[in-house]
Structure formats: C-alpha cells, structure tokens
Image 1: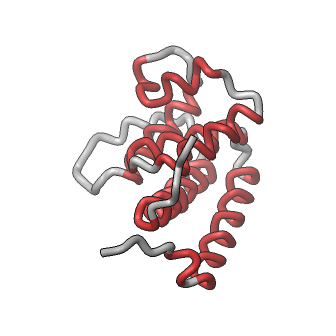
Image 2: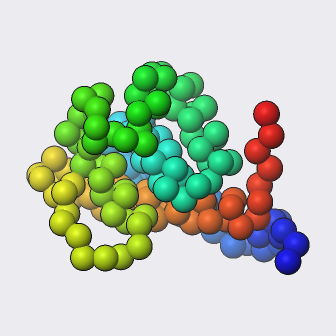
Length: 145
C-alpha cells in the first residue's frame, strides 16, 4: 500500500479535527491548566504512539513557551523524576491511561490533584492528540532534519 495523506484526501475531516482541537484547547484553558502542561501531555501521548512529526512539533512548541530541556528530556519517564508537580503527574498518568489500550488498571492519577473539569479537559486533550498521532503516522508525514 502506498502512503496516503489523509488530510489532503479528506480535507473536511481534517478541518473537523482542527476544530475539535481548538475546542479542546479552549477547554484546557477554561479548566485552568497551564499551556506547558498541555504540551507535556501532547508530547507524552506522541511518545506512546511513536509519532515523530508530533513529537518534534510539540517539543518545539514547549521550548518556545519556556519549557526546560531537562523536563523535556525526562518526560518519557516522568514518574522517575522530581521535575513534575502533582497536577502534571496526574495529567500525564491520565493521558497515558486514555492512550494505552483499555485494560483493568489502578487509576494512579486519581489522587485528587485534578478537578473534574481538568480530568475532562486532559482526557479530551489526549483523545485529540491520539487522533493527530494516528493521522500523522498513517499518512507518513515526513520528519527530516
């Protein structure tokens, strides 16, 4: 099978995903979540999904917003470091749960660090990021130096 750029093939669906992403970004802001936390969630979801295109884009976005290289270097093993706040840890754990295949697991993120509104916002953020990752990986978006 040849690579098909799904966004170009079905631009209305792509525009719908863009609109959903904008709605979720608004929900993240309304929930009082830091924009850098949103970038960390996007990066972690993209790591799990193996999406080089989104990893590069959101790492660059995080750096432009002032994120440290130290924190970005350890986000793949965030639970092993002391770089992240309880809210960030809860959001990253929740994003992992939303991203990984469903299985009965202990909800380690559910320690009260996130409000119901924040749980909803982070869940939607992970859902949208999963969609973007799958679009980029399936379409074989180029990621050259």
